[in-house]
Image (cartoon, rainbow over all chains, first blue to last red; front, side):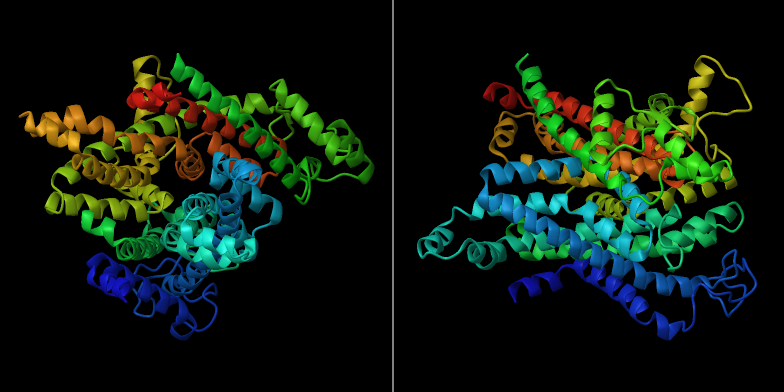
Length: 277
Length: 325
């Protein structure tokens, strides 16, 4: 309750929530606002925004409605961001929890793997994964999740390292509770808040990764994606720059919304830090 | 000397990591549909199965996976990265040709982000919660949220198409043959927009970290002592606070070396720079797995090397580290 109040009192958090809510409404209502295929031919190609009242944001070089692609793209971006973040969080929490709880050889082995993932540029790994497993929307989402987990694992491990020696955990251990119970029911709930805050960063990065991949035309071409539209707009950049400009603003606003919400959550869940600033 | 030994130990510890990466990558690429021979066959317009078999034998692709992996690691130990069938040259040569633009781009983007992140972070921290701080922090948030490739395209529209101040892409002007200082200036002109594009997100991160760590250090006791001595505020910041506040930023350089290398894949293809990142993209499209593996190897080496330098830098900034061990 206190956390919620603190969250609602911070202006950045409110602005972020409003932006994110707007993108959410765009995504969920995409089929209602723009029924029909957003990638289908809608009218004469390359009409500037405002030129034709039927297309408030204009059309791209294949004569597709940019506004429709924007709305349907919101759905794709949020979905990929959310699912990829969940995958990254699950892998990261599992590895971080095991490494932090058991320590020793388990910790060393798991951290070596984490290090290997962190040494490799994540976008390069993403390229390799997409090259190997293809670029349907499912594989792209899973691949983004796979390249994004290491920071989550490190954070979870650090939390577990400090929590596992606490008295309440020792008390449970003395009671003879199983390791699984200790990890899942005792330590994990206490380790989660910072991980949840960090998830907002993971989600922002996931959305950026997908749009960059789509921009390079290496993501699913059959899905309306903001990055895809920017990439296609590149061919007409010198004259019809609005084709690339508009979806870019949409990405910017979404990431801004996610980061602001994350910052608000952080301030609300760590009041000590917030007042120190 | 002690610093070097410490950094050297960290370097040795990264060897198993490197091995892990290479093995993982090699096994991963076994899942890839189609190999180099398939790509080559497609390029030369097809051929019969017997010819494909012969080519597979020629490139050593008919051996078992374990044998291929072992051969690959053995060759890597002698820095032989294999042969790129697509480029018709040894992979090491191809990569070496493409390395300079990427290193130049990364170095300039890093300097840009580090310098301006530092300055803006200091200004924001010294005017905390007043308008300069609000302005800088807001800008930081917006920069952080800007997709780099989109910023690059918009910069091309503004600075190359409309204002015509800077070239839209490429590494140097191929219609002229400059020498000496003119050639350097030409390359610098071509690198301005890519540097801004790649550095923007890191600028945002650095200024945020710098602001936070400045605020933390400013509240410590030794700063109060320095102030009580009667030092001017500028002197307190320059002599006492800055060095301590820079530590988290230096750590971040090492942590984000990989991210920056990944970012240059996108930036290089926006600006048509003939660098390592673009090579990675091309080899994905052309299924040139040998080259892709080579790039992964070289990138990992690069990241490890950057971290080695960062370790030394860190120990120089923070004497506690070198005296501890």
